Length: 479
Image (cartoon, rainbow, N blue to C red; front, side, top):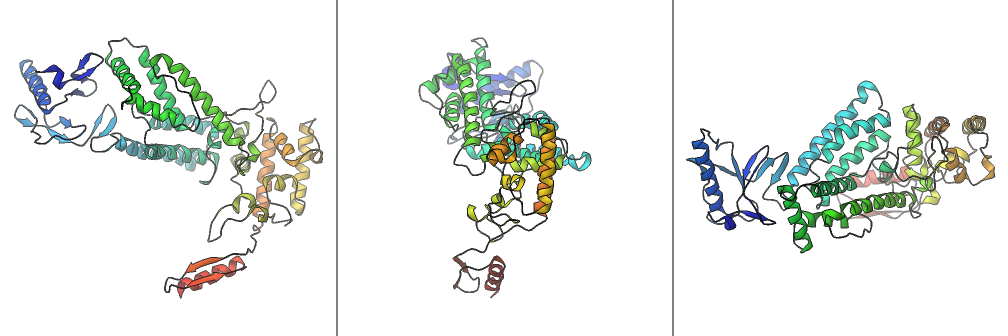
């Protein structure tokens, strides 16, 4: 047999076969594949062994040659397949990304696992966030990161299938809606976004390969892949470079040798923290202003700023109060500032200056206004006075509410670990008061074009209350 023609050459070593959980023969030509099959069949016959041709599969990676022969073990034909599973990874030889099926199947499986975990709440009650986080790391994360060292995320659509599972799970345990921001899911729980976690694990795998002896096949394959990448050719290492370059921050990438992996890992980790800090402190974001400049209380030292940690307010025991405070901080609350930002029920987005308080009808209904400023509701004022009295008893140096800007007082108010349960209780009480009164939705000057289903005429409406608009829409569509 012509060894050079039929076998893969990696760093001067010919790779003819691999024996793992499933033994495989590897060949670059159809003739070479059949010769190896014949040699294996003969060896088994001499050693009193039988190869099961029915359970054997043959997959062709790349373009299928013309006049493809029938491959056999003895007289039994071996089936040529397009899809197969090897060492736990689903492969598809007909798709541009051979791991595409693996991503979709793994996403479906891990979503079922995540939903089963969340279904426990119907039997044991609402899961505390810390315990739900531990269950996530033990049962969900291993599936989301499975095979990430091999199947790199060069296709963003396939990665999104897995990211959606992570995001949905975290939103559920935090009590947030599907419109909520993504970055706080991680800055508040201390978990790493899946995209970065998979890259970090792939880099850690490359670092592990550097510790192996030079004659180990996997080390040989790694070195060969890095050399191909340095030559500008497609390879696993080139895909890794592509994934790193597409992270949402600039990173100076040194030559991707196994000796430089530690420097790359440090750069990725530093970039992640800077990216998350920018995400929550972005001055152009109208939804993250309550997270800017906040400090995380430490048990034995002064509060400090942290980009990624398990926040102290998530330890509030009462789930309703904890979720009320979480929604308030992460802009997923019931107040008009957030709700009227949405487009829903044929209602467009309302300008910020028109999202007025349902009680005083004079100021924007924001979290800080609802908790600390509005005086148009007697129940609200009574609740606030009681809350501030308790806070002053527990925190001797708490400044007076009118002695500083309201946002600064709000940030100070949530920065104490031992009174955070009291703040959560107050946030829940304010939520109950506001939800007991309908939200103020203004009548706006509008120009809508609504095409009738029965005619091609258009209906123009200008300065009409929402109820009248709904009636006219219904009449137009039914005519």
